[in-house]
Length: 68
Image 1 (tube, helix red, strand yellow):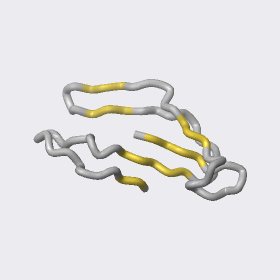
Image 2 (image 1 turned 45 degrees about the horizontal axis):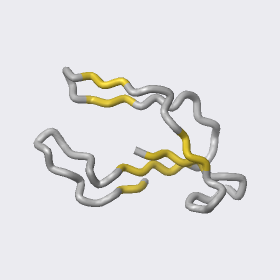
Image 3 (image 1 turned 90 degrees about the horizontal axis):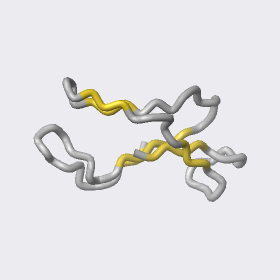
């Protein structure tokens, strides 16, 4: 998972974007859930990307990278 904040130009996908890293990882095996807390985020534009190798509980990969 990747999270980017728009840089000074205010546009996502340009050279000045800043990658934001999670503060920690918290995996809960009872619910098969991974939490990635990023702390307080400043107001602005963000982009989240998930890699194609992420899979569901049945093991089916997403097949392609997703960005939203």
